[in-house]
Length: 478
Image (tube, rainbow, N blue to C red; front, side, top):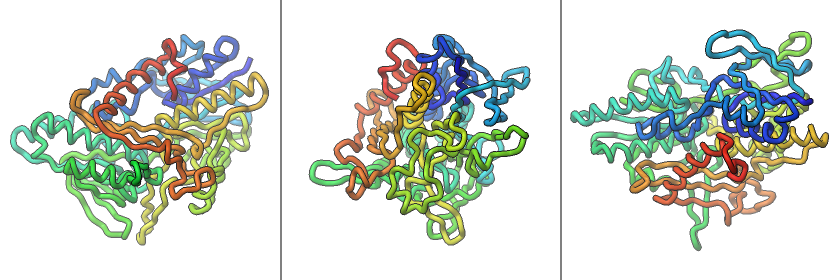
């Protein structure tokens, strides 16, 4: 009987657990260790943050889902992994705090991110002066603060909103863009948009970059860039864009930033939601003698090193699609895999930039949502193959991967809008697609409108169905 341990139950870990349980659960021991008892559909927290969705509609308990798939669930936070002896230590959450040991033959690290608010002094909802929509609790707090601002506007006050990235190396610009456009539309509905000043502050080199090097699509005989497309959205919504900027510290009511040219400036706010830099979770990696082997296992920001080509200069990385991992397997400890945000990419997709002050202003590579789900499935199927056949048969690099992102831009299903961004592949592959953009221009697409808003809501519903492992879950793509 094989023992498989999945650490983390976000999109990557939970998807992997469902496939493992479905294929192996009756005859092998599958364990999921997760610091939370509930799965959270993070993309819908943008609606929670403006008071348009109850947070209860974005989550469900993990235990009953895993029970259906013969998967053991541990509500615990992983603190140590001992790769030589093949076991992990976790601390039980929700009461006892006792240590629990789990032995494994194969392990998937899919912890999701540590939200590193401390990387930007004054950032964050707990110790700083900004809000977040990265967790349910934070989204609820952001909602409450946002509604307080709305109440002030209804009494005649003006309010300044700053939304974007809170660090020069943050990712998830798409979530920030969604949130600021949802605020715009929500304020219109509440009749107070004329009393609000909205600013989108981002580390992207230009609007529409989103950490994937931008996007260009064909519209008939002409080409349309993400900068043109999303620039039009921003202009139509009267949102002030501040691109090429790194938030360097925040004080009450004011975010201080640097730009590409090393200029320093500040933007005042009454409400700010800024996405932090992310890191891997703080896990000890110990050999059989109890010595720290983190340098072998993870990179400096604690992300698992896998079958990628690390250390390449950006130009070489951009020219080498095979530098990106295929099977997400650790190169030394072959029984350990990384999935979702927990694996270390070989570098950024967008061109890096360090200004004259030494500040790194580089949009980090996204590995969330659909990408996380796909990688979770690939890793799970390879472990299933190793157990059944002794060899892996699945692989999918991000330079081969299709991703679809649907960003809500606010409103209801009757008067709302959303944008669908289809990228193929996520990482430009100039070997396979020797055009200026390194992507399949027939598949890569941008579309916006009410129909896409319906699609966004359908994705919430269908994925909450899929991730509960209900009837037909496997036919819904990741």
